[in-house]
Structure formats: structure tokens, C-alpha cells
Image (cartoon, rainbow, N blue to C red; front, top):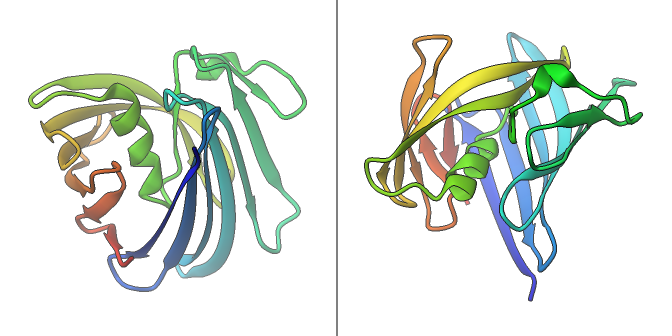
Length: 185
């Protein structure tokens, strides 16, 4: 049986809007979204599609931006190995299972759902970190701590002092990400 969830977020300033369609099927979970926003004074439109297996392991991420003849396509094997759209191995990304696109709160859902942490449990992760419009791809060390299962989590960047307590709904989708995003639908 297929389940479809739609969600919308605004950034904290109210300048950007994103629309996400999450399709949970019997063989895959697919998130497709459009983001219209502004970053450092520059307006942008971006699209992304993230495909996961049914255990929430990222298997593919596709990203492009309106008006740019540039696209990112990465394939994960679900065990921490990646290759680009041409099939070339990306060993610098080894060990990462999840992706993080800082332009959306949706990517927080990936480790939250995949890890299924109990109250008080935490996990340190290597995350494929994709920044637009530069299309830079790096590894970001992060920690997730469950404060209340499928309700509240502490997100920590392990290579900076960035920490936020994130509120999610029963599907693990962000409701409030202080100073960054608010769910509007």
C-alpha cells in the first residue's frame, strides 16, 4: 500500500517556501520537493528528489537549480558507499548513509526515521552534506539525540557549535526547527 504525505515549510524569516511530496511505497520511499528562497541576498529555485529503501537508507539524491545548467546525482548502496551519476566511486563519502541539504528541514527526517532512537539514545553520524548553489559535497559529522521518540530531537553539528532542538510530527517530519524552519502545512 502506498502512502503519500505533503508538507510545506517556510524559513524563519518567511522569505522562502518549500513544498514536499513524500511517497512511502512497498519497495521505496521517495521525497520530491521544490524550494523557492533567498540565500545571502540571491534568489533561487531548487528541486530535489531523494530515494530511500524501506529502512530509510538513502539510495539516491538528485538536485538541480532553476536557471543553472548543473545537476547533482549521487547513488548510495545503503551501506555507506557512494558513486556519482556516471558510476564513478566517491570514496570521500564512505561511511555516510544519510544526506543533508541545508536548504530543507526534510533531510533531518532521514536519520530520525532510520535510527529509530529511544528516549535518551544518541548516534554520531557521517552525513553527505550538499550545499547549493555551489553544489559542494562534503562529509558533515553530526549527532542526533532523541529527547522524545518521534516528537523532539537534539541536532548537533560536530564540527561547529551549531545545536538545535527540533520538533517533529509522528512521521518524523520537522514541525519547528528554531531559527531556520517552520511547518506551515
